[in-house]
Amino acid sequence: MDSGITFDELLSRPRQLGLPLCDVSLYDDEAAVVEYVWQHYQHLLTPAEARAGLYLRGMTRAVAIESKGVQFADWLDETFGAVTEQQISQALADGWDALRIRTTQRLLTERAEEIFVNRCPSCRRIVQSPLAKQCHWCKHNWRQKTPT
Ligand SMILES: [Zn+2]
Image (cartoon, rainbow, N blue to C red; front, side, top):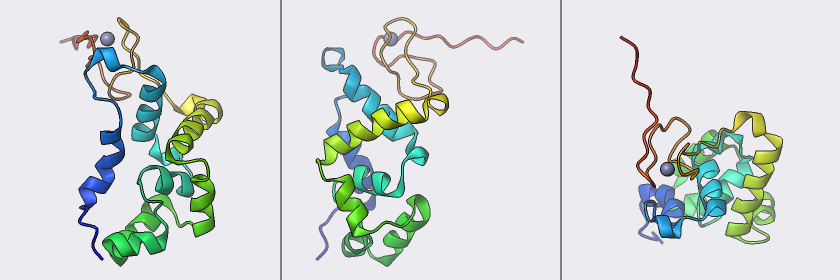
């Protein structure tokens, strides 16, 4: 049965669960780090971490085929790597949030030299991307004028 969820929704859903982006009163640094690392450093995740943590339904091949068909399952295998049902259930053993927090902490420790947590020089909050030069929280802008 088709669950009625589009592919784009599957991809964007975890972000929508996160905190609203521009409400400073709701800024939570721990949640912001998790969101940032999962958004920008997906290539450092293991196949099971990626497929279990990027989708609310642990994306085993069987679940992928059931939700979006064989092409989607193939795309997941090519993009993130193939996984077993056991690997997915191990990844999700403590729940979806715990997986994302645990994985973020592991990457920040083991892959620290590859991860740049971009913080606003003014308010120290985490900004939208590693290359961002403007803070979406306090609107501070640290973009250098390119020399002419
Ligand atoms: Zn700022």
